[in-house]
Image (cartoon, rainbow, N blue to C red):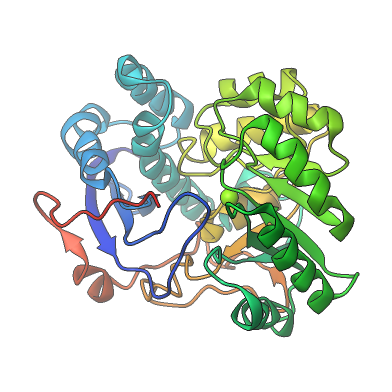
Amino acid sequence: MRITSIESKLYRVPPTIHLQDSIQRISTWEWVITTIETDAGITGTGWTYTLGMGGSAIREIINSYLAPILIGSDPHDVERIWNRCWHELHANGSGGFTTLAIAPIDIALYDILAKKADVPLYKLLGGFRDSIPAYGSGINMHLDGDPLLEHMNEYIERGFRAVKMKIGRENPEEDVERVASVRKLIGPNIKLLLDANQKWTSGDAVRRLSMLEPYDIFWLEEPIIADDIPGHSRLRQSAKTSIALGETLFTRYQFADYIRADAVDIVQADLPRVGGFTEWMKIAKLAESHHLPVAPHFCMELSVHGLCAVPNGLILEDVQGGSLTELGLLAEPYVVRDGVAVPPERAGHGIVFDEKALAAYEVKGSVTGVVPTRV
Ligand SMILES: [Mg+2]
């Protein structure tokens, strides 16, 4: 089997609801979707995303630079292809745009391999379980009082047994009040996860977390900028709560540094950001070797396969307003029911895009009208 064509397209999709955390407001989702065709008649689809910045660069890296190198390759050679792409791009950075551009290719190749094997992708990758618990994840920093409680209550009514909310207000008392009100609403038996989106210094984080720990926090996510490994080590020495991070790390080397520094409890490697399944599986196994669970960030349609493939899969993130189904991009919806995610049954990753819906969002040339995300 040989690759006969690789084509990537960029789609800029407006959010369906207001999405805001402690550092940014999402005004546009960008999806770069790559289609790989083979001489065996099997086609694979992969994708990557941004929070509105850089999508056209990723499209061009794939179409202009990587695709010509890879035409004629055997899709089975996922390691060879991943490494070839990574070394070609490495002078531009070890991770980030490098891994974001490799991801759709790698994901499409795994889609092809699972289709050829006629199994759902998670079985090809390891097949540890057939379902995984999910949590409702709210990008709800702007909500207080009744609107916040109504939003969190929707997750409970849909059957989720774990929920996440955004924190990181300027006034720490406001975070405490919001968290206390949500804990009171959900009672003692629902897991409550908090996400500060890298807002604090390590000193802030120690102080802020001590104020929040009375509310039985299952994990605190990204308390400090992801580049500060010693800061996370310091926080972990005083924290009783698990520290989750990894959505802003891009290579297995960064995860290895965190693990060596005893600076992380829950590994949240994001499938597109680390370069697809080839790299994600290595990170998951690195974590497993250190008795750490994985709970990948975002992209639940892909993450469900990773989580069901490995023994140390913990929980799936179902981001409010962030699923391909909610954005109206799929031909068949993929949703979490009763708080448990089940991978699609069909061979491959099982996700089929609605080409007509996508076409409305395609940007063929340069991107215009960019809105900054930082608040
Ligand atoms: Mg997060």
